[in-house]
Each structure stands twice: as structure tokens, then as C-alpha cells.
Length: 518
Image 1 (cartoon, rainbow, N blue to C red):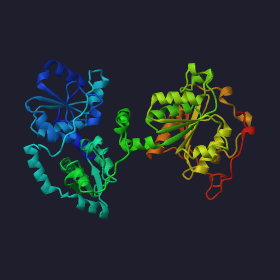
Image 2 (image 1 turned 60 degrees about the vertical axis):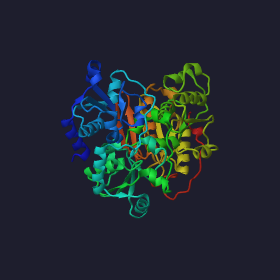
Image 3 (image 1 turned 90 degrees about the horizontal axis):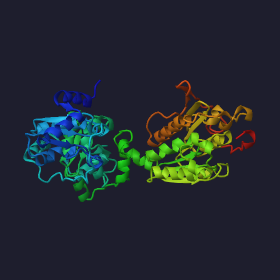
Image 4 (image 1 turned 180 degrees about the vertical axis):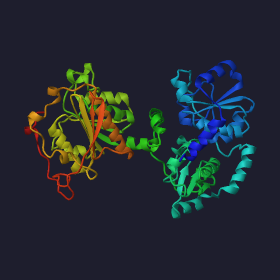
């Protein structure tokens, strides 16, 4: 059954003309004086770049400022957002405000820039007040809304939040949220309301307290939510500013810097990540066992994704034969410690993260201290003694073990997560004899194969941190590069496993070095 959002979009696409970036450019070049280009994205997005000469009127403020900023309603207006969806809703609002000739740019700013059209980076975005200079038409509309939507003052709202299980919903922009919020508030910017409400407010029968900075946008947001089927919506009178002024409790969430918001913009627009998820990544700590074929792509993408602390365990030096697959290193670093080479590469890629190097061989003497410092362990080692030690340490410390391995043209990845699925010993209780376990040096490996498996490991680690998706616990994903084929095998926990069986005491670490050819 189509969602309210989908039905709404279908209706708007039948009413509002959409034009391509190329058509927009031709109009501006031939008739620019009679055209107004309006950027309806949020301030953080606008600061990354805009169409030359565009006026920034964030969608959440549109009714408040459109008449002042766009004084001539007879001109053609072209609205655009990031991807061409919010601009349809904005164009609908502009039409209702009296602008007759309103178009929406299909594909938004992303397509404009992707197709090579000129853009400019503005100096900044103005912050607007809600209650100063409300247009007469909007003031009349707000008066009507106040007869339909209950407004509650802060003290009454505080009682509601404490006693009736009402959820607070913050409809301000992201840079306003960084100043503080009501405890536990769901961030749902008004500009994204129609797009994200059904995902973020999953229960239409629940009661919601909507608030903005001064209580105007929250009334407009509450009206939209009611149209979408959320019947129990009230608005905070006076908004966040009054709430704070009257001494009600607030929390200042850990947030991203402006540079981090710019770097992770593509994450912030994904519901499953958003700013809250990106902050989780920023707080997280992942230990990569090895800076070789698997550790290289995994660490590279963990750093790029914004994992706040990336630890690297390796005791080897860079050899020229490594460079066919170990992308953290380069020819001018032959002979350098792999940990230092990895630190230089990752710090250059993302200076906002912390790279911690552990220039040691992982042993039973140091595994406890190392694993205690991290949230997720990513196994990129290439030998059985270390593989068993990683497994046993993760079982003891109850840490998720993202496991990968490669051989010639084949690779595999899974997640061994104590208490949620099998461990490595459930599959292989003891290591194989040396003749059954040739190393990569002996058997060889396709250079690009570790990239596939290492990236899959990084994806699993990020899913674990975010708490999203179906992690590969109890499933083994194999990849055959020659056949270009993935296969999935089900892994079952061994109820008699000597390490992870319920109620079994940890038996201790075992040194398997004498049994394996490393």
C-alpha cells in the first residue's frame, strides 16, 4: 500500500512542472533577469555550494520569509533542493503563497553539479527568527491553526512528557539542534517532514510534542503531521527558547563540527545514519588486526566513514611484494613499520579521527589489554595462531569479531559475536596441520580480492556500531572472484563448544605457533 508521502509526491508531480538542470541553465542564460532561483535546502547544505545567484530560503522557513525575500510574485521561480524532492513540496508552498509560475529542478543540486554546471560556495547562511515580522497572511493562518492544534506551555508540556509517554519532536534545522534540545527528542527538520515522518515516527497513534525555536514552525509542522495521519500532535507554545527561558531541563547533544558535517554530508542524509549515527561512529573504537591485505581496505574505509578511533596491530615492515594488495602503503615506504605507514595514510585521509598504533605481535600476554580498549575487533590476519587468539579474546571479552580470510581467488567474511551466534571454534575446534594451511606467500592471492573482503568487513563493523541492518552473525558469505559469485552458508553454534558454550568457564589461551606454518 503506498505511503502518504508517496501519494503526496505523485500528486505534486502531476501539478508542478519539473525541469532538468540543462533547461534551468538555458533559462538563466537567456532570461535570467525575470527568474528567481530559490535554494530550499537547510543551512548546512547551502554552505557546501549553490547555484550562482540563488536565494537561500530554507524550506522550514518558507512561509515566514518568502514574501519578504521574493517580493515579485509575477516572476518565474525555480526551486531546488539536494535531490529534487523537497523542492516539490517547497514549490507547492510557494504556489499557495501566490507565486503562479513555480518550477522544480529535477535531480536537485546534486545533478546540477554532477552534470558540470557552474556553482558557487556562499559565505554563509542567515539565521532567521520565527516571530519577527510574520506576514499578515501567515498570521491569519496561524490563528486558524491555533484553533485546531493544541498549544501547551513549557510547564504543562513537561508534565505531559513525564506522565503520558509523549515523545518530543524537534523540527528545527541541524545547526539549531546543536545549541541544545529537549531530552530524548527525535530530530525531524521541518524541511524533511513529509519525507521522513513515516520512518522516524513509526506509530501514528502515539502522542507527539512538536517544537521549533519559537513555536511558529512547530504549528505548521503539526498541521502537516495531522494531514499525514498523526492524530495526537501538540505544539510547544513559545518553542525551545521559552522552554529554556523558563528553566526546563535541556541537553546539549554531542555533535559534529562544521568540517565533519561537510565531510559526512552523504551519511547525514541517510535515515539509517543521520547525525546521531555519525556521532556513534565518531565515538566508536575499532581494532584492526593487521595492516595487510584485509586490514588495508577495511581500515581505509573505516577512517573515511568517520570511525573515531582506529587501532592497528601489526609488527611487520612494508615489503615491496605487499604493494600489489596492501593499499595503505606505498613504494617510498618500503622498510617502514606498517603501523606507521598506516597511521600516515589514514591521518592524511581523515585528520579528524584518531589512529592508534600497536607495534606488537598479538599474543596471549597482551590480547586482554588491547581488546579492552575497543568496541569491535576486525580480524585481518593471515595465520591460524592469531586467528584462534582473536576468537578466544573476543569470546572472553564479549566483543564482536568481524572475520575475513582470503586464498588465491576466493574470500569469505562473517561475524563471530559471542552470545549471538557461533564462534570460530564452533566451526574449527582446532587448527589444521601445517601442510593443509599454506600461507598467501606460498599459494598466492589475487591483489584486488582483499579489497572486496576487507570492504565487506568494514561494512559489517559499521552496521554493528550503528545497530542497523542484518549483521553476518551465523552466516558465512563466500566470494569466488573467478566465477564472480557470492554464496551464503548458515553457521550454527556448537552447544558443546569448549569456548563459547553457555555456562562454560573460559579455558584460557593456547599458543598454537608450534602447530602452524605462519
